[in-house]
Amino acid sequence: MTLCRRTFLSAAPALAAAPAPHPLAGVARENLKITSVKVTILSHELKDKSWVTATMLIWKSDAVLVEVFTDKGIVGIGESSPYAGPEFLKRTIEETLQPIIQGRNPFDVAEFALPWGGSRANHAVWAGIDAACWDIIGKAKGKPVCELLAAGNPVQSRLRMYASGGVEYAWYDRPEALIDEALRHKQEGYTAFKFRIGTEWKNAGMTLRKYIPYLYKLRQAVGPSMDLMQESNMRLTLDECLELAPVLEELKFAWFEEPVKTSEPAALENHLRIKAALPTVKVSGGESRGDRFEFKEWIDRGAYGIVQPDANVTGLTEAWHIARIAALHGMPCCPHNWHGGLTTMANAALVAAIPNRLMLELNQTYNPFKEEIFADPLVVRNGYMQLPARPGFGMTLKPGLERRFPFIPGNYWKPNPRLAA
Image (cartoon, rainbow, N blue to C red; front, top):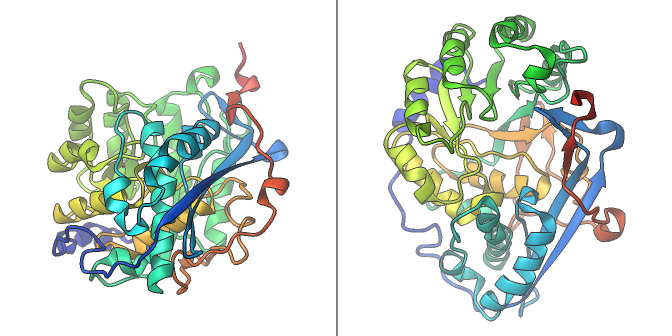
């Protein structure tokens, strides 16, 4: 079933559900204590499978595996965003956070896994612990995490996934590869595709007027039934977004993501102007926001049409609160989900549980941490992912991950040498 525009646009008014203070309200606690926390940082050099965006060449994938151990032998797993810096996360979690939560009950996750505020990195330090605690709680109660997060709402364990890419093509080297990628995903069974605006425009002499014809070619290639979503990565100006808006409307795009920079003083007002220019196409964003307080004004004033928290930044508990606040405003939640399987398992549990779900993003770049670290990985078949019915997240790690994927120091991106002056 595709996200046809009638379904998409009529979903919001029925989204609000009875509020709950917390998904564990009314759930009996088990007698557990956290004994230790271990962070394992992993890397894989992409070599011939590197990808490009803006001025960057992405040359490696990282993963930040967080394991929380308890006195009853139950171990939970989670992930903090690798973009926050794997070495920083390992050091901060093991040296600073571990002493704070040792001896605490994982059922207190809402109390001690509170966001620090500030940068994405500060928020992300809690995220892996937060997810791991939910994994422990699910295992202790014998229930999947999504059932606990649902807090009385119907659970949808079969999730529609969308292909997220548009980083295989370059304006300096056969940009038609974007069309090829979209058709490949359609053949694989995906019914929705989100793509970026490609490599640095200035270098290739690209302009919005040169870009727009590719959007028409893309829609013609995939046909009217496939949902398309434009991701700007905050790289366009307000004027460019307003010029692009009628094209996205004409081509019946589902949403326009992160159109302009949100760090600028007029960012919220700019979003409202773009939203007003898009009567049916949704404006989405929020992937780098760390807590419900950072989302609040944007939700209250309707600057977003779709909220996109990421559990590996906010933590799963905080993402639940953000999704519920959005639901009470009749606003869908569609989490950002760009990393590997450790992040997908947490975001998938959230999407399965919330009343205002749409679908879930799945990164289409090569990344062995999506499936190769699990004994029984989450996989997409014909555009859908089926969550396991096992307790917790239902995921078991393969042994020897640290030996197979030793951490490679350094930033995950480098300047794209093809763009050198």
